[in-house]
Image 1 (cartoon, rainbow, N blue to C red):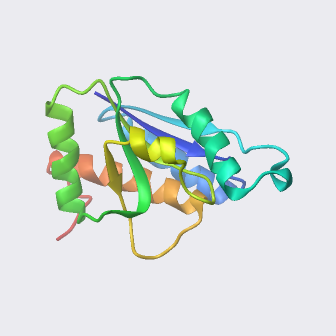
Image 2 (cartoon, rainbow, N blue to C red):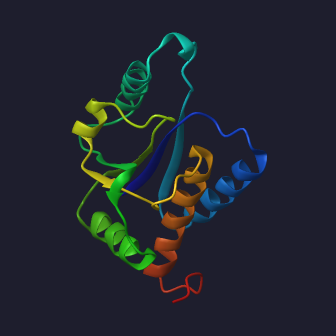
Length: 157
């Protein structure tokens, strides 16, 4: 199985980008992993929020394969402890999936088409975080899941 994170917009904070890269390098020890950045839309001042979500949705959908298991990182998604998230990752990996895709949308969330395409929704917290921080938290939690599954001393209960 391959795990992919699709994220809208680049990270302009070099500190966050460095931390994300650190966890990506660690993750590659466990699984085939990639972070794909969908470029920010241009001239958004002429677009409504729904139009922005629709345009971002088209760009994201173009990166998906029919066989992908798609999870939206969404405030209305299900919340997991790190242990339960690790179990979920394990369940997905033994199910024969080719690619597990986590999607981090733009500032206004996801288009209706993306909600329809999604297989699952996951919430990282009841709090709101910047999209840059969500990338870091998502990559770190995926890394943590693999250390839990391998019984390595990264996670403490």
